Amino acid sequence: MFFVSFVLCFVFCSCSNDGDENNMNSTSNEKKLVKITYVYGSLESTTSFNYDKQGRLLVVENKDRYSRYIYSYIWSDDKVVQKDGNNVVELRIVDGLARSGSFECGNDKKDVSLLYNSNSRLLSYDFGYDYNGSITWGKNGISQASNLEGEIIYSGKTCKGYNPYIVYNVSSSPFDDFAVAQPSLFGLNDNHLPDRIKGDNDEFSFSYKFDNEGYLVELAATYHGNSNKDYEDGMTEYYKYTWE
Image (cartoon, rainbow, N blue to C red; front, side):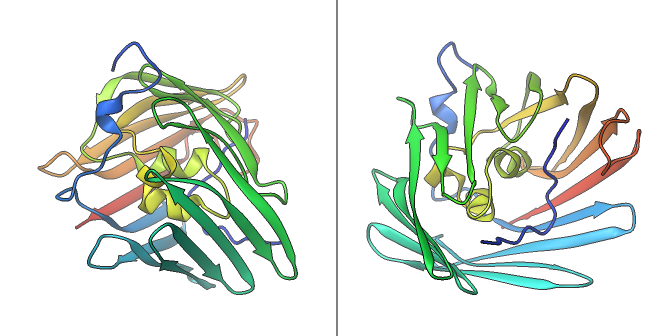
């Protein structure tokens, strides 16, 4: 079972339809995600998000004990540009969704495309350089994604706002941090919380903690199995979320 953890990632060259429309649109008084702390054994990393007065993402900073990495964002009326080192991602925004653009890595440049369903949910994306994927939506949220070799299983749990863990793990470099901060731009702002992600030979189970408003402040993901070289059976990784 292949699973993407929320660690530092650097780019090298409830209704009967598909999803719940009521969970799609963020509101002006909804809190912003400002920090994620990831802990797995002795490993720890943080991802910090800074926004302008309009709530638009300006800077993402990833760091651990060994390294530090920064993404910056420049906005115009219908476009946003993400920069990190020599890599530049330009996304064109139409009707509130990132729909096309380009990804420039060094001297090479690829077209970017994103496809949505009738409920403005992200179905597929292609950023070139093998950064592509697809997503399947069920009545309780995302049921499958090409980044996850397994089924996402729900039992009706929800949170205020959205679930950053799922957003990150169904997206990809170079836009995963951007999507975690502003999921509505990518049709990924869904508040359903899975019980587990079940593969053929192993699975992750989840537990949650919330603040007094219902925002998710801690997610614990426990691995069960022995087919993933990055995890030991019974080991738990923790994600702590700070909202403001």
